[in-house]
Amino acid sequence: MKPFSLDDLAAIISARGNATSAASYTKSLLDAGPARAAKKFGEEAVELVIAAIEGEKQAIVSESADVLYHLLVLLRLGDVSLSEVLDELELRTSQSGHQEKASRQSVSR
Ligand SMILES: N=c1c2ncn([C@@H]3O[C@H](COP(=O)(O)OP(=O)(O)OP(=O)(O)O)[C@@H](O)[C@H]3O)c2ncn1[C@@H]1O[C@H](COP(=O)(O)O)[C@@H](O)[C@H]1O
Image (cartoon, rainbow, N blue to C red):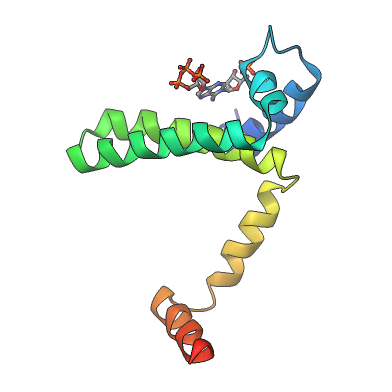
């Protein structure tokens, strides 16, 4: 069986756009709009920060799952596909993070 992927979760989130908010938490988030979804994302990110600082592996796994789910909801609301984000990440593989930062600093000088 094919391993579960972020594409699979993104497809579930997209399909929930046709559900009712009574039946689907995702649909209730989508209906509430970007401000509500962004707030939930921020809350989950803070919970991940706490888990990471405390070094609790199972909590890091669980909070990371929450962050990824809420990120995909935000992408859906912004009409941004996961592949657009992956394309951006792929572009960045051509240089190191240090090089990218240095190029930004030389432009702003
Ligand atoms: N992966 C997730 C997922 N991760 C986290 N959550 C929900 O995100 C919420 C996290 O918020 P909190 O912990 O703050 O819980 P809460 O207080 O109940 O949330 P709020 O009332 O404040 O929004 C919880 O309700 C979780 O159930 C998720 N809800 C849905 N999914 C996926 O989406 C699918 C569709 O779900 P529905 O849209 O509900 O059918 C599910 O089968 C899953 O695959």
